[in-house]
Length: 184
Image (cartoon, rainbow, N blue to C red; front, side, top):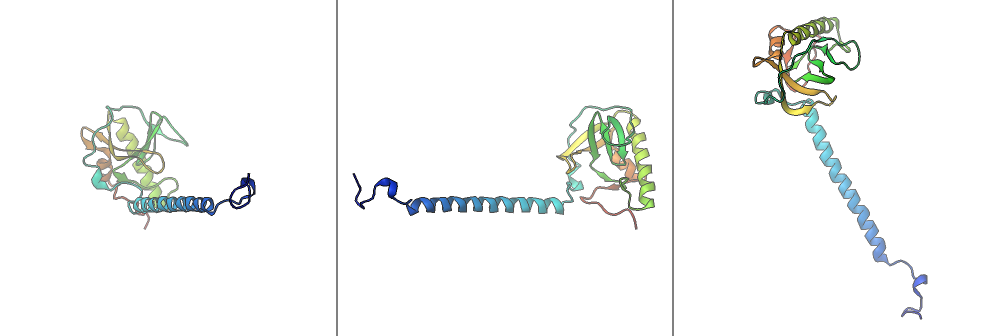
Protein backbone atom coordinates (compact mmCIF):
# COMPACT_ATOMS: atom_id res chain seq x y z
CA UNK A 1 0.00 0.00 0.00
CA UNK A 2 2.42 2.64 1.08
CA UNK A 3 6.13 2.71 0.50
CA UNK A 4 8.94 2.85 3.02
CA UNK A 5 8.58 6.56 3.76
CA UNK A 6 4.91 6.21 4.56
CA UNK A 7 3.82 8.34 1.57
CA UNK A 8 2.20 7.05 -1.50
CA UNK A 9 3.59 7.97 -4.92
CA UNK A 10 1.09 10.82 -5.49
CA UNK A 11 2.18 12.62 -2.32
CA UNK A 12 5.90 12.53 -3.13
CA UNK A 13 7.68 15.63 -4.30
CA UNK A 14 9.77 15.54 -7.49
CA UNK A 15 13.21 14.11 -6.99
CA UNK A 16 15.99 16.71 -7.01
CA UNK A 17 17.71 14.67 -9.70
CA UNK A 18 14.97 15.51 -12.24
CA UNK A 19 15.23 19.22 -11.47
CA UNK A 20 19.02 18.99 -11.83
CA UNK A 21 18.62 17.39 -15.25
CA UNK A 22 16.42 20.26 -16.40
CA UNK A 23 18.99 22.80 -15.26
CA UNK A 24 21.74 20.80 -16.92
CA UNK A 25 19.81 20.79 -20.21
CA UNK A 26 19.32 24.56 -19.98
CA UNK A 27 23.04 24.99 -19.38
CA UNK A 28 23.78 22.90 -22.48
CA UNK A 29 21.46 25.14 -24.49
CA UNK A 30 23.31 28.20 -23.20
CA UNK A 31 26.66 26.61 -24.08
CA UNK A 32 25.43 25.80 -27.59
CA UNK A 33 24.09 29.33 -28.03
CA UNK A 34 27.41 30.82 -26.90
CA UNK A 35 29.38 28.57 -29.27
CA UNK A 36 27.15 29.46 -32.24
CA UNK A 37 27.40 33.14 -31.35
CA UNK A 38 31.20 32.95 -31.28
CA UNK A 39 31.27 31.22 -34.68
CA UNK A 40 28.91 33.84 -36.10
CA UNK A 41 31.01 36.67 -34.67
CA UNK A 42 34.17 35.24 -36.23
CA UNK A 43 32.42 34.89 -39.60
CA UNK A 44 31.20 38.51 -39.48
CA UNK A 45 34.66 39.80 -38.55
CA UNK A 46 36.24 37.91 -41.45
CA UNK A 47 33.50 39.21 -43.79
CA UNK A 48 34.06 42.82 -42.70
CA UNK A 49 37.85 42.56 -42.87
CA UNK A 50 37.50 41.18 -46.39
CA UNK A 51 35.26 44.09 -47.39
CA UNK A 52 32.32 41.74 -47.93
CA UNK A 53 33.93 40.47 -51.11
CA UNK A 54 36.87 38.28 -51.99
CA UNK A 55 40.31 39.78 -52.54
CA UNK A 56 41.32 40.54 -56.13
CA UNK A 57 43.92 37.75 -56.11
CA UNK A 58 41.12 35.17 -56.25
CA UNK A 59 40.03 36.26 -59.72
CA UNK A 60 42.96 34.95 -61.77
CA UNK A 61 42.23 31.23 -61.45
CA UNK A 62 38.48 31.49 -61.93
CA UNK A 63 37.16 28.89 -64.36
CA UNK A 64 34.53 29.81 -66.92
CA UNK A 65 31.13 28.74 -65.73
CA UNK A 66 28.87 29.86 -68.52
CA UNK A 67 28.59 29.69 -72.25
CA UNK A 68 29.04 32.65 -74.50
CA UNK A 69 26.46 35.34 -73.78
CA UNK A 70 25.11 37.93 -76.18
CA UNK A 71 22.27 40.37 -75.73
CA UNK A 72 21.26 43.94 -76.44
CA UNK A 73 21.59 46.09 -73.34
CA UNK A 74 19.80 49.31 -72.53
CA UNK A 75 20.00 51.47 -69.42
CA UNK A 76 18.05 50.31 -66.37
CA UNK A 77 15.51 52.91 -65.34
CA UNK A 78 14.53 51.56 -61.92
CA UNK A 79 14.20 48.20 -60.28
CA UNK A 80 14.81 44.81 -61.89
CA UNK A 81 15.52 44.49 -65.56
CA UNK A 82 15.98 41.91 -68.24
CA UNK A 83 19.05 43.10 -70.17
CA UNK A 84 20.17 46.50 -68.91
CA UNK A 85 23.08 48.31 -67.26
CA UNK A 86 22.62 49.66 -63.72
CA UNK A 87 26.00 51.38 -63.32
CA UNK A 88 29.63 50.86 -64.32
CA UNK A 89 29.99 47.51 -62.55
CA UNK A 90 26.45 46.09 -62.35
CA UNK A 91 24.04 44.88 -65.02
CA UNK A 92 21.05 42.62 -65.54
CA UNK A 93 21.27 39.66 -67.91
CA UNK A 94 18.15 37.61 -68.54
CA UNK A 95 16.63 38.64 -65.21
CA UNK A 96 19.81 37.94 -63.18
CA UNK A 97 21.68 40.83 -61.57
CA UNK A 98 25.43 40.55 -62.12
CA UNK A 99 28.19 42.47 -60.33
CA UNK A 100 31.48 42.63 -62.23
CA UNK A 101 33.75 41.17 -59.58
CA UNK A 102 37.18 42.47 -60.58
CA UNK A 103 36.46 46.22 -60.62
CA UNK A 104 35.05 49.10 -58.58
CA UNK A 105 33.32 52.00 -60.33
CA UNK A 106 31.81 55.23 -59.01
CA UNK A 107 28.39 54.93 -57.42
CA UNK A 108 25.29 56.38 -59.05
CA UNK A 109 22.76 55.61 -56.35
CA UNK A 110 23.53 57.89 -54.68
CA UNK A 111 26.71 59.61 -55.86
CA UNK A 112 28.56 61.39 -53.07
CA UNK A 113 29.79 64.29 -55.21
CA UNK A 114 29.43 65.72 -58.71
CA UNK A 115 32.74 64.16 -59.86
CA UNK A 116 31.57 60.69 -58.80
CA UNK A 117 28.26 61.19 -60.63
CA UNK A 118 29.90 62.34 -63.87
CA UNK A 119 32.50 59.55 -63.87
CA UNK A 120 29.84 57.00 -62.87
CA UNK A 121 27.64 57.99 -65.82
CA UNK A 122 30.62 57.65 -68.19
CA UNK A 123 31.44 54.21 -66.76
CA UNK A 124 27.81 53.12 -67.11
CA UNK A 125 27.64 54.27 -70.74
CA UNK A 126 30.95 52.60 -71.56
CA UNK A 127 29.92 49.31 -69.94
CA UNK A 128 26.71 49.36 -71.98
CA UNK A 129 28.76 49.89 -75.17
CA UNK A 130 31.18 47.09 -74.26
CA UNK A 131 28.40 44.61 -73.47
CA UNK A 132 26.63 45.46 -76.74
CA UNK A 133 29.84 45.03 -78.77
CA UNK A 134 29.40 41.26 -79.10
CA UNK A 135 29.43 37.93 -77.29
CA UNK A 136 31.14 37.65 -73.91
CA UNK A 137 31.67 35.02 -71.26
CA UNK A 138 31.10 35.11 -67.51
CA UNK A 139 33.77 33.65 -65.24
CA UNK A 140 32.84 32.79 -61.69
CA UNK A 141 35.03 33.53 -58.71
CA UNK A 142 35.37 31.72 -55.40
CA UNK A 143 32.07 33.26 -54.19
CA UNK A 144 28.82 33.03 -56.14
CA UNK A 145 26.99 36.08 -54.73
CA UNK A 146 27.66 39.27 -52.81
CA UNK A 147 25.73 40.43 -49.76
CA UNK A 148 23.15 42.10 -52.02
CA UNK A 149 22.34 38.86 -53.88
CA UNK A 150 24.13 39.88 -57.08
CA UNK A 151 26.02 37.17 -58.97
CA UNK A 152 29.75 37.88 -58.85
CA UNK A 153 31.34 37.34 -62.26
CA UNK A 154 34.33 38.47 -64.31
CA UNK A 155 33.08 39.48 -67.75
CA UNK A 156 35.47 38.53 -70.56
CA UNK A 157 35.61 38.89 -74.31
CA UNK A 158 38.30 36.93 -76.17
CA UNK A 159 40.01 36.17 -72.85
CA UNK A 160 40.30 39.84 -71.86
CA UNK A 161 38.39 41.22 -68.88
CA UNK A 162 35.95 43.99 -69.73
CA UNK A 163 36.81 45.32 -66.28
CA UNK A 164 40.44 45.75 -67.40
CA UNK A 165 39.20 47.81 -70.33
CA UNK A 166 37.29 50.12 -67.98
CA UNK A 167 40.34 50.39 -65.72
CA UNK A 168 42.63 51.25 -68.65
CA UNK A 169 40.19 53.98 -69.72
CA UNK A 170 40.19 55.50 -66.21
CA UNK A 171 36.54 54.66 -65.55
CA UNK A 172 37.15 51.98 -62.89
CA UNK A 173 39.73 50.71 -60.40
CA UNK A 174 40.76 47.17 -59.61
CA UNK A 175 38.67 45.65 -56.80
CA UNK A 176 40.92 45.42 -53.74
CA UNK A 177 38.44 43.91 -51.30
CA UNK A 178 36.82 47.17 -50.14
CA UNK A 179 35.50 50.42 -51.56
CA UNK A 180 37.56 53.58 -51.51
CA UNK A 181 35.90 56.98 -51.90
CA UNK A 182 35.83 58.58 -55.33
CA UNK A 183 35.27 62.09 -53.97
CA UNK A 184 38.22 64.06 -52.61
